[in-house]
Figure 1 (spheres, rainbow, N blue to C red):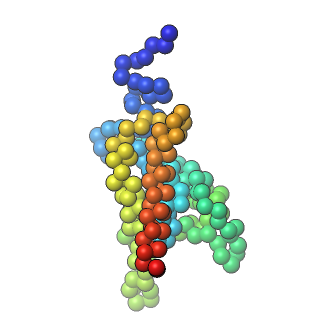
Figure 2: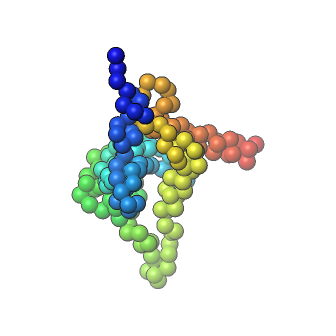
Figure 3: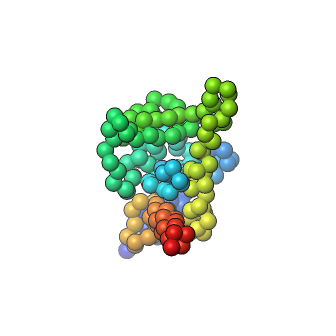
Length: 184
């Protein structure tokens, strides 16, 4: 005979799930951090999750390892570039980018490339990532975390990471439909 702890199901811990942690900026509330790798236009290529108290650089290797699109091997003529913000400007961030064959371009927040006359040459690219992170938050099942298991689950789609990946796939599908309507 199995004993069920009051209000908990299989795989749920006392804190309501796995891969959650105290959010240091939100008075210690439990939360999830999402790490997303996007292409230049904002299409998600990879996604990883961790506790809210996990530093960004610790999720970088998991995110780069979760890329689902086959990519051409980098060469000296066409290396892979990875634009990161100042949160990744430490040895862990540099090592993770190098381990996956990326050339890391790490700029400080607000720092933009200026030409000789101190004029902006290109706008900052951070907004592309921030926009992509906001899109899946429109899905109610992701903004309110109903699924407690993050990676392992018995039912298809019953995990938080699976729902996040499904939301990213829907973004690509909607983008393809929108491009087909414009082009045809």
